[in-house]
Image (cartoon, rainbow, N blue to C red; front, top):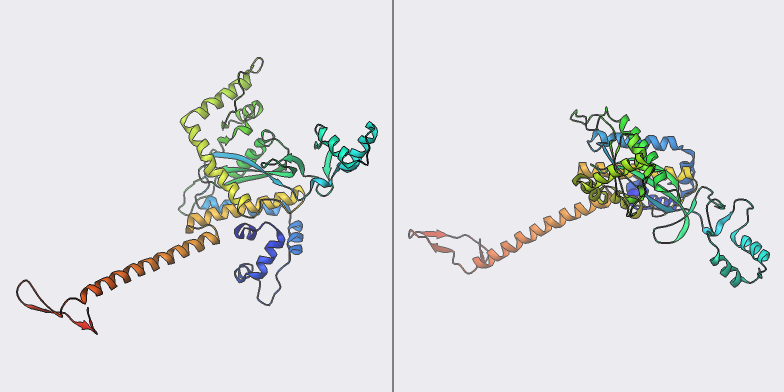
Length: 397
């Protein structure tokens, strides 16, 4: 959580910040005569604490949101992002033989009669090969669960995929799932929505401080997603789950529905919904509710890439990051600022506003005083009587 609120992406950076900050020492109850933990201790502690405990922390924060009226649970927005793993492409090896990429190229070159000692010839041969680094054939020696995929910036790298289910009414993150970087969105969306449905069902009986039941009693009924989640199987699957979909449909041209009556009905029903006013409004809200959370979690708040390895450790990081994002939402609703920097900016803004008022009053007073210097201490009233003007030094007040 310190990593999220302080914008730090690694255990080493968190350890340095903790050793330097008296406020963080107080937050963690570490005395001035005590040594703060280093990055090795932080990493080891995370490994010792199981994923179930991290999930309980995330659920506990979600309960606080429900009690604060920030969880409705009826309409879920789903989206995902890929994060570069803590493993280099140079570390990949063949799954069947354990060869490195260069060793594999040399063996292929020798079989094709190419000089294996000529580096330029090897590179040319490697560029001409199709599907050079497919996941069924290659894996990383340092992180075997990371998958080879193309990132949003166009680079090919080992990565993981984080998928969130977000309450479209409040922006609260209801469920977090972790997958390999190459897994398609259409293959993971049902799992994420099911987890969100379980989380909402567990919080239906939670009441706010005013005694109201804010969580939707019917649970998750609607799903909003972009066109990357659109497929026949997804539409049919959610139809069987009695969940309405508002999934943007890509341009596919004329389609052949012969023998696919169920798929046709599900796709057409989704098309009617996204073309309606509610569907258009939900699609517009995706940027505010979903993309903003991704920006807080992965762009500006300390996780633009991963510094841990293994699916379990990555999932733990995602859970705590999402829990911290939910805490920021709760504090923003209660205090107007969800992060220390935002609170600092608000305080600075208030102080600057007070100083501006003081300066304005001072300028008015000086202008009024300057105008008063030109007037005599006695002035004639309209009824002919004299009115005394007291003086302070050489100035009339």
